Length: 567
Image 1 (tube, helix red, strand yellow):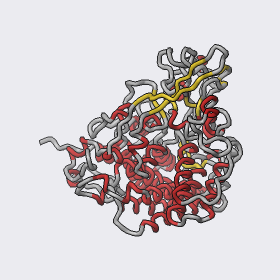
Image 2 (cartoon, rainbow, N blue to C red; image 1 turned 30 degrees about the horizontal axis):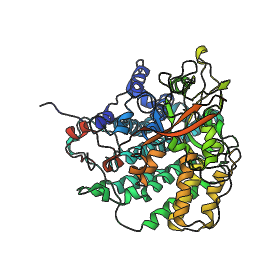
Image 3 (cartoon, one colour; image 1 turned 30 degrees about the vertical axis):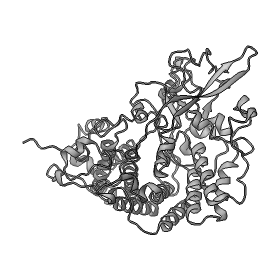
Image 4 (cartoon, rainbow, N blue to C red; image 1 turned 45 degrees about the vertical axis):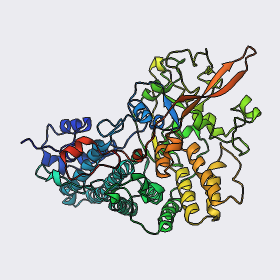
């Protein structure tokens, strides 16, 4: 009988990617034994692990993950991202099935950790010359640091799995084809959270706070502590502390943590965020240009704690420039749901029932609205955007925005696509404002009224280039909770937080399941505009969608695996 091997285990054994093809080409002139003994080739293998960190730009069939949330609608209706919105995804057909990809990264990290013990430095160790001995010590230090970089990356991959699936199988060593794959089981959620946070602690103790310019983009102490902050925030949140949504699920330990002191979990999350804030010598500060955070090599900016470096490209611009611009394809178009979340410049809520607001809905708003989203009649690439009915970028043009908006965040408007201009920028994974908001959220849950809550939310709101009013004093715990959640929504928009935030808060039906709204824009004869909110698309969310289904192929091949509830 043919032996079935789960894809993620197969990836953990042999790997299945173009990156692996490159590795095989790399060793055509040397043996495998020579490869693992080489300092330079081992460094290349470490760099290859970094490439498995998800990039975020065009994550799901050419769409951002934002288009699978209430942040946006993807213009191309045949894109697989739409399956999230209409509820047609399942264990066989998941548009964002990263299970195998993430386990490939874990496999590479496990193999790398073994390989570092075989590096041969004898040519320096046995050379008594001072320069050789210096090189020897420097390389020993490099190898030691590399191990903790790999352990950080492995922990990050495991977190990406846990936030999607709950408890998953933990592998800390390389596997062989002799393993009993059918017996592989999922670890409990508690075991996974403990493993990830322990790895973060080890990495943080052994990684540098900063790197020289030649090594920018590598994992730092701040990155490890930031991952711990995010993991513990999720661990304290509603989703992982109740299984009521799962009905009669027989394996609650896979998707929830043991009953215990919830306040202690919130305190641990707050303490982890504060450890990043208090990290000495980092130089982390809020950047004074919010727009530039997303169209530059942001890993060089003091606000960015960790980012995925990318090569020069214009693929994202081609996908997301407004339809009326050369080679634009509309792509990820922001929703009215999100636009309405941006406050007025005086800190009050926007309200369509207010005739002044409705007549000119983009006036006197949170500056981040115009920095994240292209608004009708705003200047873009040398002309006003015509998102009105009949305009060059509006309804009536094939593949024009259905929401009345276009994406600005991360899109570099300075590229001429006809000339194939490109730019280099990075996907931000951890930014300081997230840490501030992690801290404020966790602190509000276990120590409501603590002065630090307002202080750190206000730091995000009143930063240079945003300059919103500070939050009012005397907010209740519930009022502060809603303000923090809204601040995350607008500050971190399109950064792959929203879908996971609303899941961990367990507000899926009223967010991911709510109608996706847009705006109908009519140009009057006098050149002014009339704005009317309209429903763009009905959305579907069922309780089972709080977690992704384990891929059916893995369940078929490994009978020890257990499916998530409802799937």
